[in-house]
Structure formats: structure tokens, C-alpha cells
Image 1 (cartoon, one colour):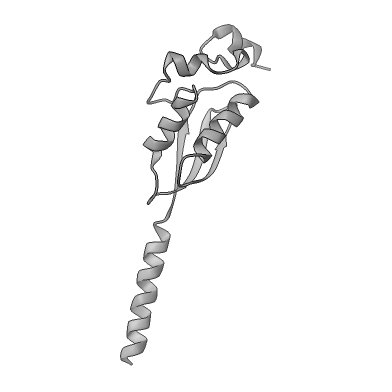
Image 2 (cartoon, one colour; image 1 turned 180 degrees about the horizontal axis):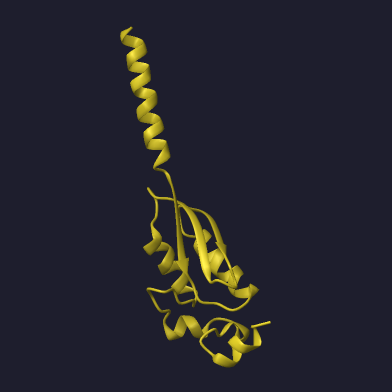
Length: 117
């Protein structure tokens, strides 16, 4: 009986810790095209602990699945800003922004208008 109780306690503890591993989150990231999508998703995936990153060109929402024990949304934000894309909370440096392709200059109204179709 003692062994059964011990095994049940161990199983419950293991299940409880396993559920906290994966976290879901989202960020608003500026961009205008599929090249931006590729750059944003790569920057997010290269962040240690990120398992899935999908950015929507129309809504500018980056949906993430990540291991909360290894990373957090702040670390992902830093990775994205480093490749030249603004988030709702943090703006990329001018140096990083200027490194993106000319068609990806999302701060320029003329470029935004070109990508509206």
C-alpha cells in the first residue's frame, strides 16, 4: 500500500511539473511583407527555448510556443528588435532598422502603401 501511494504521489508531481513547461504568448511586431515574416520568425526561433513562432503579415501578431523554463517574452522581443523590427513595447535601433531590405522599411508610409494589396 505504501508503494502505491508513493508511486501515485510521484506521478502527480511529474504531471504537474510537465504542464508548466510549455507557455504560449504573442507579441505585436511591425513588418510589411513575407521577407519580414521570415526574418521575424527566424529571430524568434533562434531564441533558446522557443519551439514555434508564426507571424501574421496582416495582423502583425507573432504567436509563440516556448519553454518558460528557458526563455520569456522579453528575450524573444530582444531577438526580434536586434534584427530590425519594432515591437509594441520596444523600438529597434536605427542601425538595426537600416539593416533590413529596402522593401521592408515598415516605418516608411510609401512602403506601407505599396504592400497594402
